[in-house]
Amino acid sequence: QVQLVESGGGSVQAGDSLRLSCAASGRMLAMSWFRQAPGKEREFVALVAWNGATTYYAESVEGRFTISQDNTKNTVYLQMNNLKPEDTAVYYCAGGTHYSLKQNEYTAWGQGTQVTVSA
Image 1 (cartoon, one colour):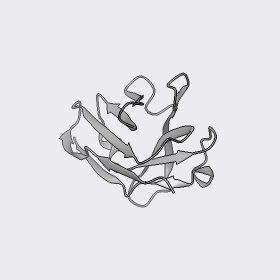
Image 2 (cartoon, one colour):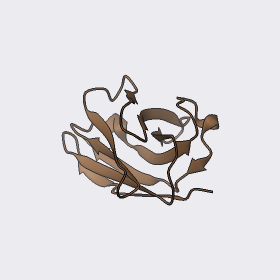
Image 3 (cartoon, rainbow, N blue to C red):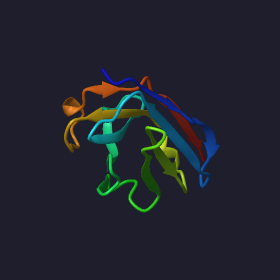
Image 4 (cartoon, rainbow, N blue to C red):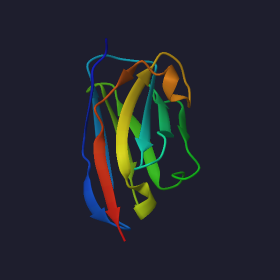
């Protein structure tokens, strides 16, 4: 079972940037970020293939967030720019054996890291 550990969350103001990291104990074909805001369901944010050749973003973050991976460190990153209050959520890293936007198709999950954006 691959273990995932997120870091990099925090409290920032609108327009600021944050970079989240997800350290994995092993490789998985697809790595994604999901988020869950208070009172809402967990939603897909971004996906990257382990070789970096494929990325996909939710429309709400397209152009502001960038997902990337470093194979030498078994780490996936989520660079978040121009943050908005509606980006406030717990962000989760997830690993799976195929590319999917559906959380139930991911078998490995991190513990989550809080991102809070104030207006």
